[in-house]
Length: 373
Image (cartoon, rainbow, N blue to C red):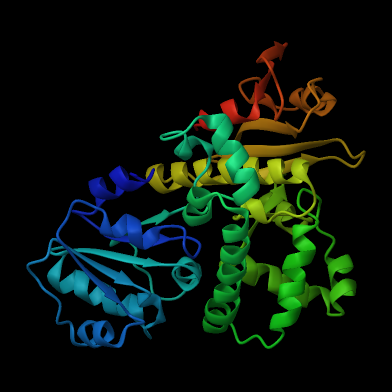
C-alpha cells in the first residue's frame, strides 16, 4: 500500500535529506524501504549497523541510505550535516525516528536548507478508503485505531495485546531516552486519566490533585507525552497566539482506538486525528503554518474544531454521534468569522447530507474520506 506522503518524498529526495518522524509502529521504516530505490538500511540500535554508521562505511553505490534511530547518536545533526555538505545526496539520504527526531527542530544545530521534514500519521478514513469502503474504515478505526498492524488485523484480542506492548515500549525505551523521569507509574496513570477525558478541556489543577504533583509537573509530563507522539493538544482559538497557548487545551490520542470515555469521544478523537493529519500534510508539503484549534466563549458556547491555515480560519467543525439537528454554536460563531470559512457538522449516523444557510451536515465517514485543505 502506498502511503499518502510517498510520492512527495520521491519528489524531494533527489535534492534534500528527508526526515520522517511519527509515532512508533506507524510505518516509517516500511515506507522508507518500499520506495523504488536500491536501498541500504542501517539501524543505529543494531551493533553491526552502528559500526558501519560511525565509520561511514556504507555502500556508496546504493540509491538510498536509510538511517533508522540515528537520533540516538550523540551530535547526529552535525554528523548528517557533514555527510550532506561533503557528499551531497548521492546516495540519497533519509533519517527516520520518533520523539527525539521530532524535537530536534525546537533548538540546537540547524539543518536549515538541507532537509525536508515529513510527519507520518496512522491510517485514517481517507487513506484507508484506498482499499475499503469509508464507512467500514471509520468503524474499524473506532474499534482498533489507525495504526497499521491492529487496523489490518481487526482482532480485539490482538489489538489489546499490541496496545499494551506499544505503550510499554514507548514508556520504557523512548521516554527514558528522551527525559530523565523516575515517575513512570505516575505518567502511566496520567495517560489513563486522559483516556477518560477525551474531548473535555484539561484542568491542570485537577490532574495535579489526582496525581499528587504540582501543576508545572503535570504540564511538563503532558509535553513529554506530546513529544512521544502519544497525545496531541488542540488549543483554544484566539487571534493572539500567545493567549491561546496559555489557555486550557484539549488532548487527543494518536491511537484513536485507545479512548475510554464512550463512542462519542472516540468519534471526536478520530475526527481530530483526520484533521491534524491533513493539516500537517498540507504544512509539510506547502510550508504553510497550520493549527488545529477549538472555539469557546465565556458563556460556554463551543465549536469542536477550527482549522487554521496560514493564520486564517478555513473550517469550523462540530462533531455529533447521533444528533442530526444543526448545532446552534456554528450559527452563533459564524457571524464573527469571514463568510468564506466553511461551516460543517459531521454526524456518525446520518442518512443524507443536508444544509441550512451556509452550514452543511455530512455523514462522518463521507466527510473524513474527502477531507482536504
